[in-house]
Amino acid sequence: MEASVLAVEKIIGYCFRNKSLLEEALTHSSFVDAISYERLEFIGDAVLGLAISNHLFLAYPSLDPGQLSLLRSANVSTEKLARVAVRHGLHRYVRHNTPPLVDRVREFVDSVAEEDDPLIYGGLVKAPKVLADVVESVAAAVYVDVDFDLQKLWVIIRGLLEPIVTLNHLEKQPQPVTMLFEFCQKNGKKVDIKHWRNDAKTIAKVYVDGELVASASSDQKDLARLDAAKIALQKLAHVLPVNSMMLDFCAGVNGTFEIEAAKHKLHELCGMKKWPKPVYSIEKDAGPPHEKKFVCSVQIATTNGILQMSGDEKARVKDAEHSAASLMIRALQDCDYL
Image (cartoon, rainbow, N blue to C red; front, side, top):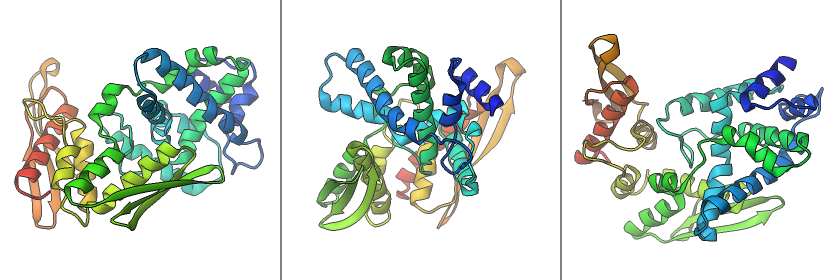
């Protein structure tokens, strides 16, 4: 455990006075031979919310409470914090005795690796809560170790949380609740989202034309609504025409037809259509080492056959794959596959 403590201290750039706090923050409840992070998680959830609230209050002096609330929720959501854990490799140092947890975390890590840009509202694989819990617990351990000084905590922990979700990020990634209402309105459907408290959780349920479509729960009302809306969108995509939603979903095109987070969006489109995952190949690799040029293609297997699309020439393989994914999405729209 000493090696794990040293590794995490290096990740967050802080040397603990009381190392046992960090040991506790890295211990899952299934590891019965030591104190788990549950108490630290309790305070970490609250203190991260307050730290982010303070930052947003100072950074956006003219923003109304509703928008501030959306920004705070996006910055402390399970999806966001789980990606923080993966980005910094914190999941490697959690001690537990739950073998299935390894597979769930690995599946999520692989999914995150496919994302071009950090996703605010999550992707195809639901974030394991344990990853967000560890980030909250580590933050709480720092908070306790600096004698409950919130300002010191923020100075230490802010780098771990970067990139902080901004208004610009929210504009680029449509909010699921907004998408749900717009999608249903275009299809002549009435949406109602109801929520209530059940002990420490808020439960949100989505009704479309009076019928229950999806439900989700969370410690926070906003997050429960978001999760329920995401589930509802995925279900409705199979039973209603999806052109309008996908056009909004794939918004963000510039003059060369580059779609924001195209690889991930194509991945989600295939998931919604129950098609296999897209397969990318390098079609061209030319030029000297300092001036490499790449062209990539993407192939997807639909119910009507295999489709393939090549992208534009780019200096990086990642950008070439992104170009191929962008053009594939446009082709799918033009050919009425969506």
